[in-house]
Length: 62
Image (cartoon, rainbow, N blue to C red):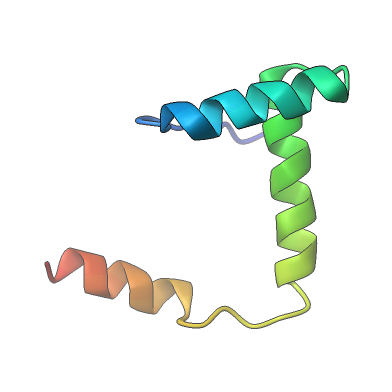
């Protein structure tokens, strides 16, 4: 199974994620995974605009 590490998570986002995890009786990692899954399911029905590869290309050209 793949692993994901998130660096430089803004404090307000971290606090929100912790709050959501407590309310759902989950660990921080479990909540992050659940939220990512919901987002991925929703986005699977809609195309990304702009496409992820275009965002990467733009970032690399900065």
